[in-house]
Structure formats: structure tokens, C-alpha cells
Length: 370
Ligand SMILES: [Zn+2]
Image (cartoon, rainbow, N blue to C red):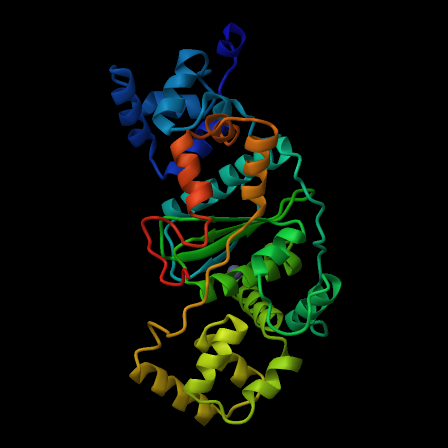
């Protein structure tokens, strides 16, 4: 214990931990003051995060209590742990301000540390089947999607469990309530690390799947930052081909689709009716006029904002397996497991075991649970 008390918190980790909570330095100082009973100033937090004041001993515990992470988590080195934010891909629904993005990026980095700790100790790390595929004037995002399906031996037709497919290919998939509706997913793959996709638990099942396929597209095609709009479009085209391969879906879209047929196709393919209509026009299966007529009809039925036919939200299994192994085979207590992730037991359970279950986060009833 004395030994531990001499260990210093990593300044970068202090910042990352605070950003992951979405707090300013003043917010953290206020919380620390409440825990400590003495007045802690923003200036102190600022100097600690800049590494100008070493944070050791009881001070680490004070930061940890206020931030709701374990002291051990705050002592982890950000540079060697791959916790730097690096290149991050997003699937945004609305524009987001810098503080909101900072929080998401910090959440992504912290999640990576947590998941890596758990899978390492559980000895459940997997090798990655991901490889970079270049897209250019001749090789399109749809070609890339076809290649991945082929390389991963995905059976022709609808993909039943996209999360399982990615997990089996070596990706870390985590579902969390990201605390915003402006964003459905983020992903990241630093060199030499497993790809990580963080999905928002608030998205309905069909959108969730499309977002995951979209992130897969980014992870496969985009290992360097590029023009945002181009990459977004490429990721969407990849996702459309990956989830709805043209060879098989084209005949199903062709003979004059109507709303009833769209509902059947949605249930079969696990994608939204809107995505199916988009696919139909992109593949030339319907005319511009037919497309507009369908959109007007969906609007009139209120389906543009709330589609019928709920698609079950998929749940990652890899992390649950790791937790089961830690507790049942390595005999860790739930608290010890949570501490591996740098969290208290309650929050660990809420983030990693509730939100990833198919029934959804407890604060967000999921109508697709069946
Ligand atoms: Zn994107």
C-alpha cells in the first residue's frame, strides 16, 4: 500500500477521465471540494492535468473518488496504453459541438482501456481479420464490401447477426448509452490494435445495424483522415452493399415495390424501409418518380419519423464472455472485475452488462425486445 501511495497519477489520464465525464476543470474542482471538504480550485486541477503538480498518495484517491474511477485507472499511462485519441470515425446524425465530441472521444479511449484490460486478464483476445482495402476510381466501396463478405465467408443474403460477425473477425464492439442522440456510432483502429466500435444503445435495431456496417466501412477503407463528406458517402455505400448485396437484393426490389413489400423486406434484411428505398433507387430498381411516390406515402403514414416493424437490437457477446470467465473460472468477485475496468461495481454493471443486453439500457425502454 505504501508503495502504491508513492505512485503518481498520469496527467494525461486525469484529463481523459475528466473529459469522459463531460466535466470542465471547474466541475471537477467542485466535486473534489465536496469529497474533500476543503476548497479545491480549478487552478489546482489545471496544474495537475498539465503535469506541473505531481498527484500522488491520498490526492490520487481524491481525484478517483470525484471522477468515479479507481486510483489504479488514474495511474495508467496514456501514452503507452494507446489511449491517445488518434483517428476517430463517426456516424453522426446531427452536428456536435467541441465539448460533446471531446467527451465521446474520451469515452472511446477509456472504453478501449477497459475492454482491453478485461479481455487480456480473461485471456480472450482474438486475432484480427481486418485488412485495409484501398478504394479509388476503379475499386468502389461496394467492391470493398464484396471483398470483405468473401474473405470473411459471409453467407449470401441477409446478415443475421452483424455484431457477432464483427466480433468473430476480431473487433471489439461495445454498446453504451452515449448520452446524446446526435451520434449513433464511433470507431477507431490505432495501428497494431484491435478495431473498436462504440455504438449508441439508444438507436433502434435497424439503424444500429446500418451504423455498425458504416463503421466497418470506415475501418476497412479509411486508415487516414480524408475529406469528411467523401468518406461518409463511401462508408454509406459500403454499408448498403454489405447489408444488401446487389446481386441478391436487386430481384427482390424490382417488380414494383410498395409499402407492404417494404415492410416484408425490412423484416427479412434487418434494414430500415428508408434504406431499402434508397438502395432501390441507387441500383436503378425504381424510377425517380416511383421513389418520390414512396417517400410521400411514407410521410403520409408517419413512417418517415417512426417506421413500423421493429428490428431486434443485436448484443455483443465477447465482453459478457470475458466477464463470465473472470468470475466463474478465475473466481474474481464482481467488484474485482469492475476494478479491472477502473470502475465501481454499479457503474460497470450499468455500462457493460445492462446496456449491452438486447433489452436495452434501463432508462431507454427498447420496443424491439422480444
Ligand atoms: Zn462515418
